[in-house]
Image (cartoon, rainbow, N blue to C red):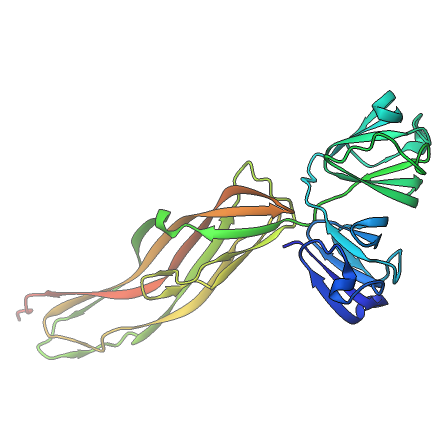
Length: 339
């Protein structure tokens, strides 16, 4: 989502408007010359002092701005739609792309080199750039865009000192669990076995505890691919609606993942198992307490969107469920003892 929220007063107060596409004339939406603060989500925006994207520009990257440079003097807004990855600009010493040239890929203070106050034209190969009159992003600016070459600077001629490539907003990631490609492994494990023998001719009261408690667990984890492009600290929600294993386990609706941190959670609960209270005569009774252990592995499609670009990669959601516990009874008749 790329949008800008503009406010009538500083510190995000007063009337507000929200836009997701260019606004060539703010007077047509009754918000001309009144913007004093703003918030940007996603790709940067350029604000202009005149309608139709003319006048003095200012660029705003993703973030919150409690005040703006041209307070109460913004008349149009333009969303930056260029691919902002791997930016490149070529600066030329003379008009019409002549003379010495300097190719830049990162923010640069020309004051520390031989190109300070000497640039007269430029070409942008990729991205969008802000050109500043003074060091440390100071003074008047120009916004340089891919496909909008400038063969001749007017007032800005021989005044360029600082160059900054605009950055895209934080990536948004959509996770889609591909349940149709689920893989599952299951096994049963005897965690306790209790044997009692009744040699008598009458039913015998079961003298061992009638109830036992056992601990079962559900462990969820997420694995990113080895070649993941998702950066550290990125959070995403893996939707798990409707996922279940048997009747005893229901996963949470979502599983939160943060790149660079542990992505494993374990839930433990006590499970009470009832054992029979009486044993038939001449019977050997074996009670096995059985835990069903299930491991489910599901690929997760991750669509990462930055600005207007989307990339797809895959991760894997893994759930290890061991909270399905039940009892199995086995009765074996034995020969009565003789005197």
